Length: 143
Image (tube, rainbow, N blue to C red; front, side, top):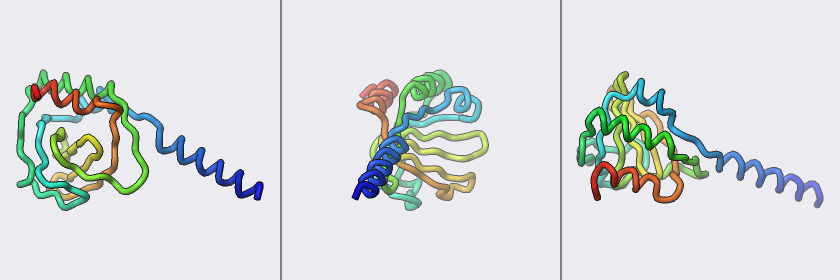
């Protein structure tokens, strides 16, 4: 019984520390690799690779100055990778276009990656602390 209790405590501690580590976007890395940024609306809830680019409505294409400001603010926001299957994309998202033609679509609870041909290339759950994501979006859309 004691061994089971110790094993359970170790597993709980591992799960707690591995799932709750805060991470940040790297400003310098993003500044070097991001070509342009758009604020978009994903109309249908997207779980994995079933994103139809027709379901994305561009709300605002950011200027280079706005892109830089967004990257600065994003690099100050922490996020975690919650346990479980990747959550879906929906609502207002940030769409990054990289210089190597990759695309990243970042939502409030998930991120999806697409390769140069527009095909799904992975995704994961990301949860931002508090209202940070919504506050960031509202700075650029003036909601």
